[in-house]
Image 1 (cartoon, rainbow over the protein chains, first blue to last red):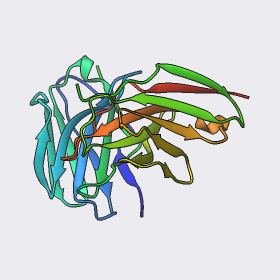
Image 2: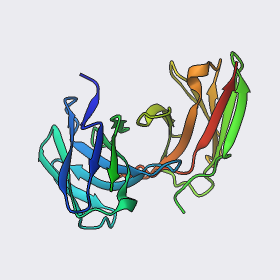
Image 3: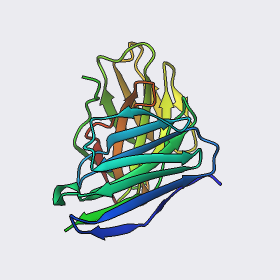
Length: 111
Length: 109
C-alpha cells in the first residue's frame, strides 16, 4: 500500500459545526503533515507530527485542532470555522527524513 | 527567505523537451532541492530531488548548478499529462517542506 487516503473528499459545514478530517497511511511512515491550499495558491504547511507527537505548528488558529492517535492515522478537528477557511486540506506522510507523499485532499467549504 | 524563484508560467509542445528553471541563491549546504508537481484537482506528486549532482529517474532529470544556486527540471518528452503546476522546493530538513509559487506548465498538442 503506497498511498495516503483522505476522507471525506468534500465537506460543507456551517460556522457553528464541529467536523473532522481524516487521513490514513500504511507505509510505515512516522511523519505526518497537514497542509492548507487556497485556490490558485501553493500549499501552506499547518502542522507536522513526528512519531505521533506534534513537532511543528505554523501558528495555526486554535479552531484547527490536529490529533495523531497512532502511527497510521492523522485527524484534523474543525470547530467554529470562518468562510475564509474554505480550502483544500492536504495530508501527507513521509519517513522521518524523506520526501512527503500527499493524499488527494479534502475540499472544505464553510458557509 | 527560504523560498525559491520560478517563472510563473511556461508553455511547450507535446513530445518536445521541457526545461523548468529554479533559482535558490540562498540555499544552504545541507538543503535538498525537491520538485513536486500538482495536476488539477489532485494533491502534489513527488517528481525528483537532489543535493549536489545531477539526478535521473523515470519521470524526469534534475540538473543542479555547480554552485547550487539554481537547478533545472528536465522533462525529456512532454505529454499532455505533464500539464501541471511544478514546484521547486528547498527542503530545510526537520520535515519542513515549504512551497513557493510554482510554474504553471501548459503543453500544446
